[in-house]
Amino acid sequence: MPSNFIDYVKIYCRSGKGGAGCMHLHRAKYLPKGGPDGGDGGKGGSVILRGNRNLWTLLHLKYQKHIMATDGGKGGQSRSFGKDGEDKIIEVPCGTVVYDGETGEYICEVKEHNEQVVLLKGGRGGLGNWHFRTATNQAPRYAQPGEPAQERTVIMQLKVLADVGLVGFPNAGKSTLLSVVSAAKPEIADYPFTTLTPQLGIVSYRDGRSFCMADIPGIIEGASEGKGLGLRFLRHIERNAVLLFMVPATSENIAAEYKILLSELEKYNPELLTKARILAISKCDAVTEKDLDKIKKSKALKNLDIPVVFISSVAGQGIDELKDALWVELNKEQNQIIEISHAPIDVTVIEREEPEAREEEEEEGTIYLNEVEEEWDLDKYKGIGWDE
Image 1 (cartoon, rainbow, N blue to C red):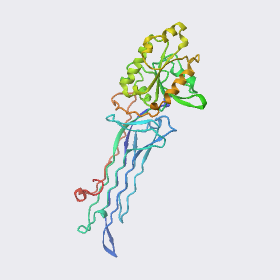
Image 2 (cartoon, rainbow, N blue to C red):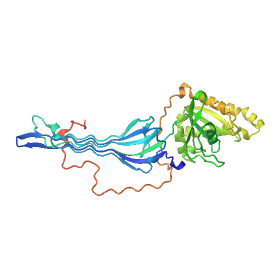
Image 3 (cartoon, rainbow, N blue to C red):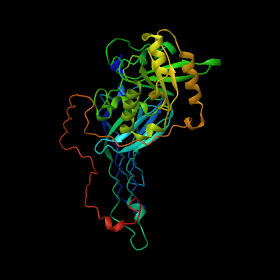
Image 4 (tube, helix red, strand yellow):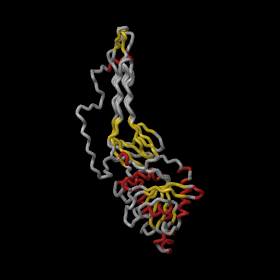
């Protein structure tokens, strides 16, 4: 179902706080002056992202608005360490990019299967009073509190991984082309925006070789400002090695439409202009041979300085030639490594008109920071442990 494809979620994450160290003096009938034996607090759990190639959407995180790791346990007597908090591992599909939910700044990305990225590090446990014993202070009556938890609201965006991305206005023939060259079955109709979510297809080539093609929702003028499907389209095209621009042969001005598409990509991310580009003139079967020859001889088209292929997905015209052109571009050395710098996002842009989830009411008496049972004199152990 198209509604199951979720490529944007906003969640609140919090790591675990470190457990407090124990302040305890050993007492036994056979050892009246046993001295300090307070143990260390446990480490708080971390929030970790892990890539999973079996996932293709962020649907499993859509209704999971709060993700929290557990806190570390307090230290005990006899130098007993507190229990470490349990890490919270978030499975995400490969190609997930994480931004700060307040500022929109880029944080990290997960590209490989089983790749792990620590999103929020758990707090270190405090040291027990056993660590602060000295020759002149043999019975220290203080211990170290644990590090506080880290909390953050993050935005996760999925940017699909594909070799070739289809770029064009609505009803340019992108879905039809994908259905012809692969086994994908995207929705095809005579109204705009039939493709609402990215569709991936594996294109078979000669000698058992293949590459991945992505059908992206159609773009319109002003998409970089959020018009139409806007940013929901543009974020997916950043991952493609080659951009295949598609303009129908029935268009009044093919070169002008191509320049509009190129302009929207530049406004969104100027680095997109460094990618290899091919222009496919689609629906060539819908025009006469005389008009098609006129298009081929057009000076405006020749001045674009990019490879141009004339195709008809319905009639099967130029499909093999298009595959050859795409394969040549994909195998060029400069197109092998796809490294992009993720620009900050505008968190004020509302991409989905969804009602905000009602914040859960906090239980009375809930404490998120260290539960301090006494006044900690931090000056006594400043320079020792995690404050260095």
